[in-house]
Image (tube, rainbow, N blue to C red; front, side):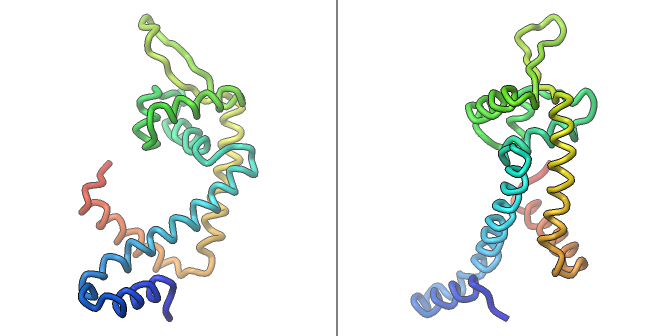
Length: 166
């Protein structure tokens, strides 16, 4: 069975037979990009159903999984989210206005500002995360679980080979 990527690769092979042997990475990367678009749209829709943007959901879950006291510096959130410092500041401003997080200064160094999940933020995170997991399960409901597990393991190896480490 062929997919859109097979069609694209076939078109390039026909148009540029000289690069046919060089098209092998396209088979993987194009599928990852297409899969990412499908998953991203679905995840955005899930978050939006709870009144949060997908980027806000990312911050909420990062704070939640950090454990008590559910507080991180903006710098730590910046590293976890892979966005610009301006974008993370904007995101935190919006989330603070929604009552999801609060900025706190702890200790004697008042320059250090931390972002803490509020009680409302905890509630929203629990609800969105439950729906998020159900959404992922729904997306993969017709795919063999062993195939999903093998693919996840294989992608880990590819990411590690590309230098993407914890």
